Image 1 (cartoon, rainbow, N blue to C red):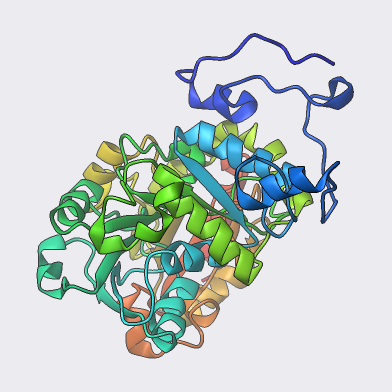
Image 2: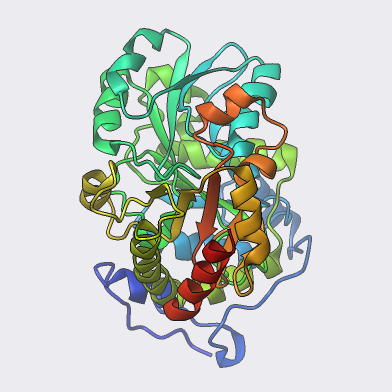
Length: 420
């Protein structure tokens, strides 16, 4: 079937780009969705043609560990949705974070990172990267000036969470952008809670965005995956501090080439084609879901503020939040994750056990509303001071808001609070 000639403008709204990309695609037999290609290897007519593909002189598929047509469709769709330079999909969000930084730092190098981190990222920085000889300085994300003294010849990048999980604080991305520019550092942002729907490189000036695509994209907690996005801001080859000189032939795509041809090739953290397909299908409704979830989250946050059993509500969409103004300035919506504090751990457990509609699950970004006690789950193996450094206390509940009717969610929360 011939490919339609009409192209969509890259200036179309993000909702449209999530469905169509920036160019209407054509699939075999008139299919409206891309095929799921389960082939691990790809045949060529001649040895010369194969040589051109393997040498990089011609585009083509080599092996699904490196690239796969269905996974490539997902990478293209996310790249177009965000208006970025390119993306590389990985087998999980954890793999995406690790690879995004290993592409920048080697043994003997140093990184600066927010101390308010998701549990798996914290252990990556303080244990795994430390074992590999990469030193990570954990800092207060609200004060870039305090990190000035930590920058040395071996410093390569700054890592932040767009909205910290589970403390829900928001860093000043523009202040950190100035900090990175003044020292020639790359700015890497975990944008999982923003999703490609809310992440706009023009408004959120990171060099690299990382998404745990296990959250939000497919919608119903049906996949595991990750994405590393090169926003197109950084001149990788021209930045002497970042050591991309050997990738000069790759030009502006030097960072993406190191991710795919070095790290993905050597480590094999490849995304399943079926997971890529489910994410693309889910992305078509991402905007609708996230707008509903954010509106409900604000309604829930206001309800929780009014309850005597709740000591504190952490949600950047609340006018009383310390992150409210920054969140409004940087992001179109405040996300659908919030946390709140009760009297103590025992009260948290009584509350969780009393929930009937809301599920006790260690995940977020689902179509279902989920709750958990971070200190006894995700951070259970952490020392007390490590929990406190990440903003985790024994009296904290994390709530990931789904797409159920807000009245039903609030009714369940209310009866669970009354059970305390």
